[in-house]
Length: 278
Image 1: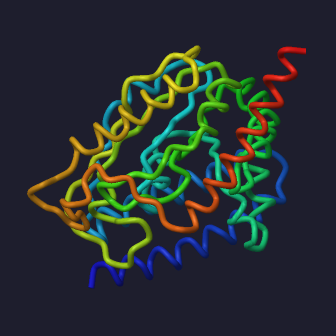
Image 2: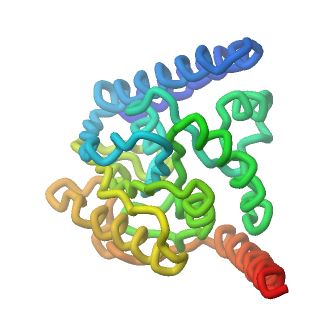
Image 3: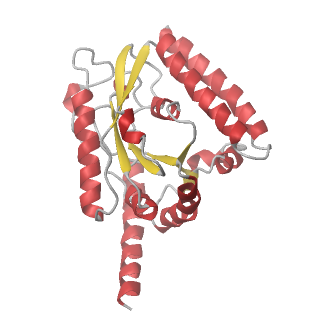
């Protein structure tokens, strides 16, 4: 019953704030738009706690007090991830796939928010989008949220980490704050059923700028995945299947996109290497 009531509340509230966002997208400046987004996310976190019975504890705030831009790279198990993270900040940009721009007015709203909208196939198009946006966000000293897996992962598992997060890290030349979570135990991906209980979202020690790609990607994944596993509540499993803990999973859609993306990334790296040698 709690899940049904929450899902209805979620749908109606989202519709209401979508209408508000469309109106505010026509108003000069970003203040009203961002204020409405903050309010929306706080309302959803309230609903998670008071309707669905999901009590999310956010820790590690000391790791996001850095003056200037910060990249927040989060575990992505749940539709609730974005609500919780956004509710912690006054102004936050984010990276999202172009799949959501098919909805009416969404493209206008995302532009107003200074979101980085990328082609889901990745590659050089992702790189260009990062470069176009990074200067604006860096000058404003804002934080930018990215989900390095690129897909919602089933609780306990992970997708291959996408290298777009490294290009963002390199362009911004700023710290990356990994975020671990076990929220998927209570709200797994976009499942209808929610599971009552506590969950934790934890900002971890920042990774300083300047690391090489392979070392950075390995460290980022190790920090996020190892801590996310440590946070799992084995006394209240919720949506967790213990047999899945630590597994890498990839559906056929994600696999096809990854393979296309990897081909384009290799071609881009080869072109950059040739240009560097010339």
